[in-house]
Amino acid sequence: MSVHSTAIVEAGAELHPSCEIGPYACIGPHVSLGPGVQVGPHAVVQGHTRIGEGTHVFQLASVGAPPQDLKYAGEPTRLEVGAHNQIREFATLHTGTLGGGGVTRVGDRNLFMAYSHVAHDCQIGSGCVLANGATLAGHVRVDDSVILGGLSAVHQFARIGKYAFVSGGAMVTLDIPPYCTVQGDRAKLTGLNTVGLTRAGFTEAQIKRIKGAYRTVFRAKLGLREALARVHAEYPDAPEVDAFVRFIEGSERGVAR
Image 1 (tube, rainbow, N blue to C red):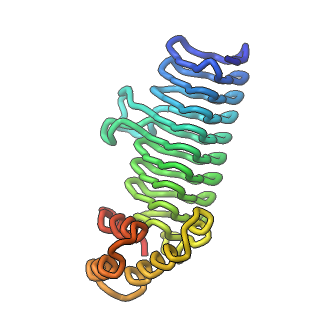
Image 2: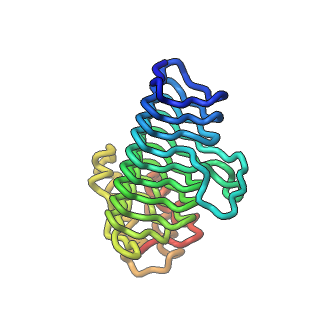
Image 3: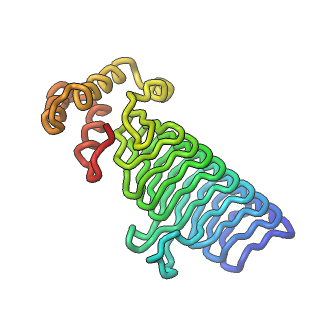
């Protein structure tokens, strides 16, 4: 274990022997750091926080601070961060609240760029990117392989489907279906994230089916129930289309159009 002489590691913290803690970093008493975790200079990891293998918390980041919620009264809520994440300078990730289930959860291999923010009770999948200044309000769900552009913001309780792309500066107030691209204030659909799907290994046939489902739901001028029923009928054995339909059917806030 490499702990700089100026770092503060409080009694009770659990650090794997392979961790590296930089100058003036602060590690709280309820923190658990897995193998190979690096915490940079002046970073703070506090609260009931668990960080998985190979995650790098860069200098001046704040991980595990109490939620910015006036109802919070000091309850021992948690932040769980998976493996091989990068949490860059001045990024902030907060613990949960009792009203939101008590846990803010982050998957694996995510990149949180400078000044990005993950609020209380957010649930983030794996392989996501939050660019500089991207902000999630409380209770937001972000599925796998989502990209949020710089200075974008997501309203509390909104959901972002997998492989979606949120353009820089977008203000997201409604759910964003999987595979879609949105931009603007308030964020509206501008098409499909075909570049992202291709890079992720989707076949031409899969992308063609997704395009067909997208056109039926959002461009065919049908009622939503009628459009979803037609998509069900046209693509009965396409898991990628089924995920698209199920996301929209499960929306409580309504989906962006």
